[in-house]
Length: 323
Length: 269
Image (cartoon, rainbow over all chains, first blue to last red; front, side, top):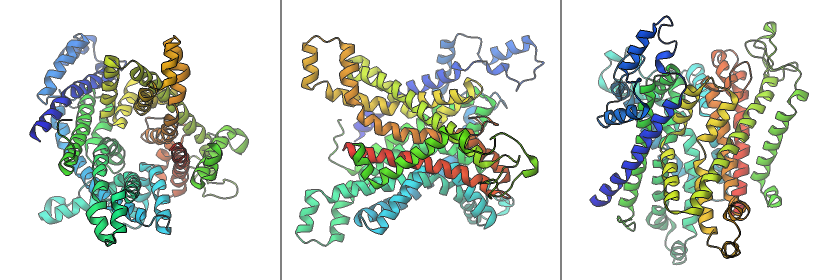
């Protein structure tokens, strides 16, 4: 197992280098240099601009800039933000926990609602429930998340007043005891979690329904039914595991989608997370920040796949580590 | 195949939705009563009624006209972006699949790397950094960031096809390689891409509307479903219909393409 993990980690190295290269390239394809935009005083002298260029290493040839940057990010140093001069790494680190919490909660919500929904509608294939969930699944797939966010803000937030519609804490948060702090935080992020999980929920329940039907059609399951085993025993003991395994992989693969979605719902609900930071960075053309976030986003995606693979190999002993 | 899709209830409704939305987009000037960008402050924020079918927005523009014209933007972005993605995918996928070896390894590693990025992150940075957002730029950028699926599918198909006897026969007959690839391999490898492309149009429409919603896509006053929603944000409390209808249109259109794509997938099985 350990050897397998090491092997997987080693395989990730060329991917990580590629990721850094593409992130760097994307930013440097952009016309106009960061020191030329109106963010800085338009009256700024040419001399001062050259000084700035020198400060950020923008006067060096591109490949040197890349290697310098690569050396720095290996030390988790993404340079300094062009907007407020703070370290990019600390800006990202302080925003990361909120985004991760919301996304992990969404994954849990997806996991615990989508699978039962999919399994049940597969079990009752062709019933009213099944047709209803199929329709729901297709609609869920097609719902634009920002629209859902606006509607839920208006109806659950403003009209009914059940949930707060922006930020992650109440004004008097500071004075709450710890349990009330936790509840307050959860209460604030319930709408974002709802919005974030809605789209993927549909996909996963459809997927687990399909997988379940496939498994039910397998000979060993049919044999178990023919033998007269009680159906609950067949399902819990034999049919569920082959459904859960691929679902783990799908959950791992949904990381990039969730991160991309964070940009949208964090902007709408004014949540100070990574997605909003990214949006602000893009609007301000904060090159070091964008590069840093692209790399971290891709790294989290790789990590998601890696963890999913680990869980998969751990759960299914048939998979050879040597592969 | 088309006949059987028509028999599939979900597939048929998907096809009807797609046809309906396409005809709205094509016939837009003949359908609407008002110009989508003509202002009339006296008629601002009217609820849906006989005069303005879906009401008016905060500048008194007819929402129905704006939505019908928005269909043009959404559908053309969907089709063109996916067209670009499929073309890139076909080129890279068929080269990788046919030549194999180091070429294949390089192309496929590059594909893996591109798949690591949260695509919305990549699209946002490109849109914001390359230039002022224009509808053409958005088509190209969505295309440039979504060719990985088609490339993988084409490569897989070609890998299995190139061992088939009819391809071997063509090789023995000394048919030039480009002819084999273009005339015999690619046409036979296209069917799984068809499903991917249909579903891809749906997601391109979602991406364009999200971008426009964030103010990084199609710029006002040109109406797009996304930017109508962006403008509707400020009047959500007083005029919920301005938020409701464009979103519903996105939902229905995306739903149509998804249903159609699923039906084609079922047929290809």
